[in-house]
Each structure stands twice: as structure tokens, then as C-alpha cells.
Image 1 (cartoon, rainbow, N blue to C red):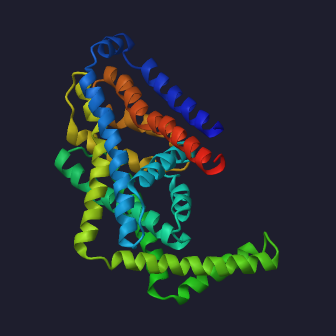
Image 2 (image 1 turned 180 degrees about the vertical axis):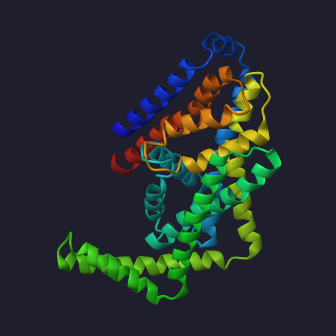
Image 3 (image 1 turned 120 degrees about the horizontal axis):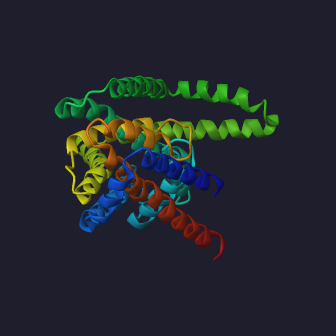
Length: 328
């Protein structure tokens, strides 16, 4: 709860500073004229973000012959979004999704493969969509291009690491042995030996599960990528819906391009849920094509719909899950 409070304070402070340095009187006039229909649309778009994410988990699990009910997948999505909102960067919910999958009888290796596949699909979408939208929107910033290049380099290195694991099962032993040397420094040899066996088994299970996923027909993989597109476009359209609510041009292409840059920047592990970072980044990017008096209210409503809703709904779901598990 402490990190949730820190993230909330940082985000609110950032929004307050933005309000302070924009034309506040005009801003309040805009708020009073807000079109509630488009605010509801923005909320619906973020709801679709949750719905499509849960659907992708169900599809990914089915590709590994593992049945995960949609209701449980939605609970996983909401609960892990809360964790992502209170941990450094915006990508902190993966361990919880792995844990919740293993609670349903999925091996740690297979669960890790499912969650890793989610993030790989996201990364491929980001790195593919960013240059396309920079070109078609005509929105070119040195910052955005640099972000894209750095992200591409890290993605390429990660894929090379995965290739090293998949190329030969013996490479799993090499990785496990290196981890074993580290573990021996922090625990007794007997426990380290037990941990080594577990790590090897799960790395091999992860390797096999990942290979099984890749071996799926191209049509199935295309469905997964399409689900990924739906997930992110749902959330990327939220600012445009808010702009419509404020009786402004939705600047859809420019907004989506900015969102692509922001989502990559938000992965930097500095503050809970990337609070402060995304607000500052949004001011910088959106100030290039929006008047300053719009920025404060746009960012405030956007963070309320995306970040604060993840905190509130995710907290409720986590409490409910804990009660059902430990207070039966």
C-alpha cells in the first residue's frame, strides 16, 4: 500500500504542476463544458483494454493445451495491473500472472512462457507500429526516434538470449549452473542443490512451452497479434476520446504516435507505475500539437481513467482474491 500511495502522490503532484504552469482559468472553463458521453467512451475504451488482455491470456493458454476460464483471466489482468501500478515501471504485474497461472495447475515453466509471450507480442507490436505511425502522422521528434532505437536494441538482445536458450537444451544447463554458483553464496549447499534441480526443470519446461507456442499455425499466431493490436489501440484511443469530450480535435494519429513513445518510456523502472515520468512525457509530446491550456485537464482525466482505475479496481480484485483463498 505504501508504494501505491507514493505512486498516487507523484502522479497527482505532476498533474498539479502541469495545471500550475498552464492557463488555469481557461482550463476550468473547459472542464465545465466537458461532454460526458465521450468521457464514458474513454472509460469504455479502457474497459476494452482489460477485456482484450484477458482474452489474449485465454487464447495463449489454450495454445499450450491449458484451460483458463475467462473470468479468472480477467481477474489475473486486473490484479496484475494493480501490481504494475505500484512497482517501478509500468511492467510489474508479470510475476503475479505467473503465480496465478501456477495456482491453476500450470507449471512454472509454461506459465512463464505464456507471460513472456504476452510481453514479446507487445514489444513486437510497439517496434512495428512506432515507425509506421511516425511516418503516417508526420510526427517526428528526435526523442521519439531515440526511444524507438534504444527499445529495438534491447528487444534484439533479448531475442538473441532466447535463441541461445532454444538452440540447444544443453544451454539450459549452462544457465542453471551459473545461477547455482550465485545461489550457493546466499544459501546452504543442500538448498542450493534443490533449487538447481527446480530451476533446470522449469527452464526446460519453459523452453518446451515456448517452442510449442511458436510451432502453432501462422493463423493462430496472427490471432494473438490481432488481440495485441486490439489491446493497445483500445488504450491508445483514450486521450482522443477525452479530447472529444473537451470539444477539441482528437488528433488521432498524432496521439497514438505519442502513446507509442510514452508506453516504451513508461517501462523505465524508476517510480511506481512510472508516475511522474508519463505525465512529464505526455506534456512534452502533446505540447507539440495541442494548446497549453488543454494539457492539464487532458492528462488529469487520462491518468484517472487509466492509472487510478487500475489502482482502485485492481486493489478490490486483489482483496477479493486474498479473501477467497485465505478466509474460506
